[in-house]
Length: 450
Image (cartoon, rainbow, N blue to C red):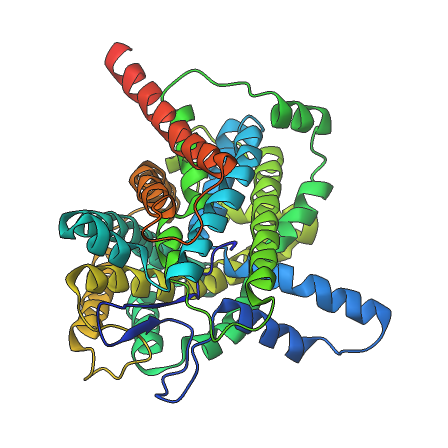
């Protein structure tokens, strides 16, 4: 991925499997996100002509990037642009080598071990470490589930004019129904297309009459603002792009029986998806910095965030933004819920998997149901969705550090891996964790001394 939000995993500690993208069929072959991308492209683009062939080659990268976008990423980028202007563009670019390295390593863990990170930690480092990793995933995911559900329901409110509360039960039930009774892969084939309007932020950044001299200057030379909120925003950027729960989920990525070059193709697709996602985040910051101006997160609403699309689409900005948020949220929510429940089940050694019938993995499906019920209930708290989304990414950024440590432990353990990390891979993963720790120390120092 970019990491696969529709990746699949196997819990070798149990008889079941966890596969968010496979069909619920005992004879079916689990298929990961790369198969979804190929299927989407095969259905939408004819296989003829040089131009069509080039488009067919490019489209998987766009779809891959679209699968990695969630409302939290979009709104965090909008907040950073609207409050800090162009001054965080360097942080977005700095995340790119972090992401490429971390996702490459976590994907290699999945390919070589065919086990999830939590299960590997439990088996090789003890149950307490496995529980600790699962607890981190639960904290990150539950916050993001609540926030993304707020965003999706608020997007429905933007389109219909009805209060957000009217849509909580319907959206929550839809996510639960998809996970329990339907094939998530087939549903995603349709839903992911609603995410594509968010790529209009690239056009908005171009047509917004940005000061490109400042854009380039802030991209290459950091100009750090004074105060604790600025390093907090850096942490939010890293949390929104790195999405720690995806790292845990990606290490569980299980591919169907590998064909020659299958891993190389997957790595290339994921690398391209990472670049697409980073470019989109960069464009959102530029467009928001040019169009919007607020002093703090609480002063920004979803409708105001939609105005950042105005330079590209005019009055259609609100509608297209709402559709994009709805699509991104409905793609992300099932995987957030499933990956959280998968991590807990893996830590406990329970049978788990979306390809299992509910009566075959009762505790796993009970976890899904309870998680959605809790998230739906918390959504009735009156809160600005933008604030919830932003702070969920700050939390994700903070908790990325232990996840990165766990990945370093596993990926350099010769008893687990056939190949270990290169020096550069260890450097970039360590740098990612070090950047978060440094930002945390700055925030702590500022709070204690000012």
